[in-house]
Length: 229
Image (tube, rainbow, N blue to C red):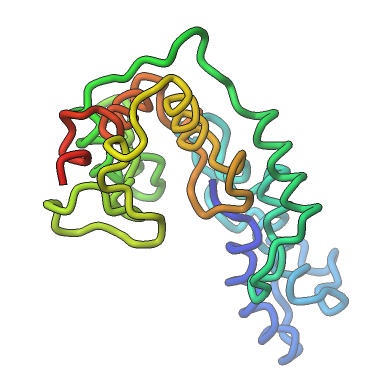
């Protein structure tokens, strides 16, 4: 999902200039109905984005429309504290963990691993959920996990990110018990259960359970190149 505060921040920069200059910002055909001069830059940004219908709505692959993407859920709201602040207070962290555990859907019975080869493809694929003039079509190509964008998983892959922890030899170091599988499933599905306000996406609902099982196999299967470095 888009972070509503992040989207609004960019418009807020324009809004600050507009207010400082005393400019009138048109509200469709109702420019006289709203006194934008009484708004803060943040309020004006919210107004321009959500109330003026100045953007073209589109149907999302996950259902709903663009407005739904830009509307924060409870976890996003709780994690939208001042970006200049480096700490996360305990009360907010506890709230986020509780919300994440409420959202998480555990699979029934033992967790099975999928095919690590398919997991490698999903880890490398950033396809999915993009909108615009050429919106991604999940009917012709499945969404990927884009894991390499943030993690080193297989050092033979030339381009990998370092925002998240290095996952080389993940399964080799931790084993492949049901407890480890449950933990990995929880983190991939909703990482806020263990890392409140993390930058890692919540993949439950974006990837299928089968896709998650393939990525888990890529991390845990002894035959996976992740565990042979």
